[in-house]
Structure formats: structure tokens, C-alpha cells
Figure 1: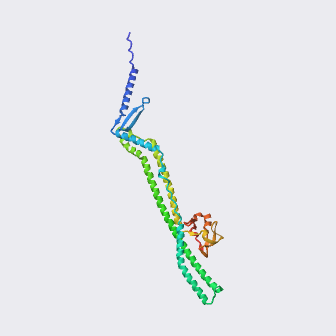
Figure 2: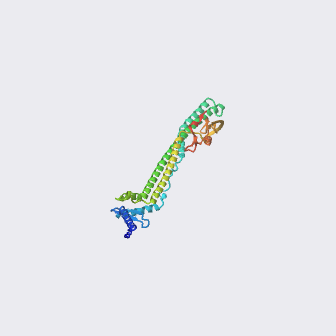
Length: 351
């Protein structure tokens, strides 16, 4: 009979050995693809998790740069750990009180009227003496009807002259008051602008000093671009630092928005000052014998006739500023003397 066939070889054992050898070769190749690198400036180091087998890369600085990086990180962390102190800049500058110029206005009125009176007094005294002498020479006695009539006419003319002088003085005083008010406003604007500029400079310097360690850390990152690094990957600033930078940026944005609002308010004040000069005086407090008519100049605003207190006997037709303010406040402005004025389209007409 024939011989018994030989038993087959242990292929499974060989396959297992080959698989282990292949895995070892693969692990060696993987490790070879992840070399540790070191230069005088920085290093790259790979580590493998013994459980999951995942690889992780670490990078950092060598030598003196390592000490510098650690010091900057500590300084940046210390800066961000402290809330930004807005109080160090003091209160936000205010525009301040610019005054009304009323004192200068009254002083100018008194000076102008006093000067006019110093000329008018001797003139009218001479006219009165001359009139009295002429009437007596005509045989008219003091107290007679004809005498009193002539002297009364002279008195009214004299009152008109002094009233005209007062009106002129009021005009000069109002102009002087407006000039003082504008000068005060210009000075306040310059002070306000200077204070705001100084505050903004101080704020920018403080924010720059606060972020300086992070800027220097960012400039050091280029030293980590070593050969073999995956995509040039290197040290990344901690995310909490970026969050702190964003917060400081938001705070600065709020501050700038506040500055813009203050600036717009200042521009509105300047526009108002420019408007007042062209508007017509119409405050009820400077008028006498006011009579409101049934006719309306604007819806809800009656036409009125009146006299100015400084110009008795002369009637005007127009509106009362207080009536206009109740219906159309956009057509009314308060001057530096505290009196109301109306839009030029509503200026009074002399009857």
C-alpha cells in the first residue's frame, strides 16, 4: 500500500508572524515620518498615546527664547486677569457752561445809551430853553393852552429821540452779548476738543501697553517654522488672550460711539447758534398792548398786533413767539439773552 501523506505546514502561525512584522514595519515608518527636531531657537517633539495610539506634536522655544516666551505669557495673563481700569482716565470730558453773555449785553446797552444821553441832554435842554423864550416873547404865558401845546409837542419829540437812542443801544448790546456768547462757545469747543483728544491718546496708550506682551508673542511665532513641521504648525496663543483682546476692542468701540454722540450734540449747538442770528425777536415779554386776532398765521397760531415796549405808539402785525412755540417749536429759538425769536418768515410787519 502507499505511504501516508505528510501533514500541511502551520500557515496560520506564519501569517500571524508576517502580520506582526508588517505592523512593526508600519509603526517604524510612522515613527520615521514624525521626527523630533530641535534648533537653537525652538523644538518639535512627537508623542504617542499608549492606549489609543494617537500621535500628538508639541512645539516650544529653546534657550533664552523659552525664558522670554514664559515671561511674556505670565505678563499677558497678569494683564488680562485684571479688569481694564476705565477710571484711570477720569470722567468723560463735558462741554461745560458757556454762559449767556447777558452781563456783557447789559453793560453794552448801558454804555451806548449813556453815551447817546450825554449828547442828547444838552441838545434838548437848549431846545427847551429856546422854545420857552420864543413862546414868552410871543406873549404866551406858562400854563396857557397854546403854551402847553407847543411844549407838549417838544416833549414828544424829545421822548422819540430818547426812545430811538434806547433802541439803538439795545441793538448794540444784543450784538455785544452775541459776540461774547460766541467767543465763550469757541473757547469751550477748544477745551472740549483738547480734553477729548488727550483722553483718547491716554486710552490708546493704555490699551497698547495692555496688549504689548501678546504682540511680542505673535512676533516670536515665526521662529517656530522649523523644517518638518506639519503645515508650519507651531505655538498658538491661548484663546483666552484673544477673547480678552476682543473685549477690549468692544470697550473701545463703545467709547468711540460715546465720543461721536458728544460731537453730534456739539455740532447741533453750533448750528443753533448760527440760526439765532437771523431770527426775528418776537418774545411776548418785550411787547405791550398785544391783541390776538381771529386770523391764523399758522394752524393754531393766531395773528397778533402789538407794540414793542421800547417803541411805544408804533403798532406791528405778526405773531407771538410763545404761541408759535406751542404749535411749531421747530420755528422758535431762545437767544443768549433768554428771549424767544421766530423764523425770519414770521418776522413782524410795521403797520
